[in-house]
Amino acid sequence: MGVLDLASSRAVAATVVVLGLVLSFGVVCNGGKTSSFVRKVEKTVDMPLDSDVFKVPPGYNAPQQVHITQGDQLGKAVIVSWVTVDEPGSSSVLYWSANSKKKKAEGKITTYKFYNYTSGYIHHTTVRNLMFNTKYYYVVGIGHTERQFWFITPPEVGPDSSYTFGLIGDLGQSYDSNKTLTHYELNPQKGQAVLFVGDLSYADNYPNHDNVRWDTWGRFIERSVAYQPWIWTAGNHEIDFAPEIGETKPFKPYSHRYHVPYKASGSTSPFWYSIKRASAYIIVLSSYSAYGKYTPQYKWLEEELPKVNRSETPWLIVLMHSPWYNSYNYHYMEGETMRVMYEPWFVTYKVDVVFAGHVHAYERSERVSNVAYNIVNGICKPVKDQYAPVYITIGDGGNLEGLATNMTEPQPDYSAYREASFGHATFDIKNRTHAYYSWHRNQDGYAVKADSMWFFNRFYHPVDDSTSAE
Ligand SMILES: [Fe+2]
Image (cartoon, rainbow, N blue to C red):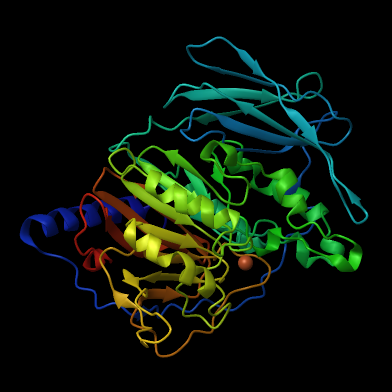
């Protein structure tokens, strides 16, 4: 099945669910499927520095690595970021919509050094007070080489605002990464913003964490992220902790290059924060910052979850890097300590779905929880729980480290579907009760829908949706 067939298969899926609701008819799924699809094993290698996707834009001091993300809690602001290399230049962003005057926003410039590397001039400018659901054009590079882009703001936050998120994780900059990004761009479901679950450039796999690979990555993804916001999560490849070369400040390149609106949600750190976008409330957590009791992240999340008003944002989505439910033999149980700390809250507050990366493959869980254990009672087994989120591991962007192919056997009951392929997904929120989720593997140059599920909202429609998987 090719990319173009996806629209028709989606229509069929919609029909099936409608029938299912009316006639109690559903697609039977017993859970625990390990895909029979076996990807041809090829070495995953990074694209060379002279690849066209890494090309430096022409012109004196031309802005490069242009990227945007949400700039406030509601989606009325956008952080525009870019790098200039010849001189600092202007941090102004000129922006306008079809029916508004041109306006200018001013920003700031930062630079950093990492071992023997010195960054370009990194610009971050927040454009505020935008109208919802409006196309804006923007120009950067004023005074030197100007470049123009555009973005569309989300609909106003509200319970029935439909919206489509893309999901990409562990992307890197290999030939496979390029296929994943291309498939996402060509997906007829048209993601409007990307939820990125961590591990961006993989520059740290190079000698001395060669930060030139942070620059190439920024140029590689510009074709998407200059036009739609990517919502950032920090992964282990963002830590860049290298005491052997004197680099002891974790997250230095990442935190200089990728800004997020963490203060808007009362967070004291860019590694955990929340945003609202359309009908979704998105909480981003850091697997690599302290999360134990009394820590800043713990205290923030403890106060954050009660703030989520499901009658305003029915969909509660959590992003983190290291998965809690993972049946591959890679990074096995790395997420366990955070699960022990926070899983009871996720059940109490009825999180709809948790997206994680880290494991370079794909997996979707049943709705399960494992919160009964108290060190003496021995009850330590995931059990089906309709108040629990679905856990999705989507660390399959295609980075140079290659695929995770080795799975634990037999497949545990909590694992609904798993497959060792690269790919991406979309989470298509229709209204307050239904969202259509689909995962698309990279297969022989095409994106092929390999797993999908109608999500029923845990607040408005908390009935069993496990049989809605296809
Ligand atoms: Fe990772």
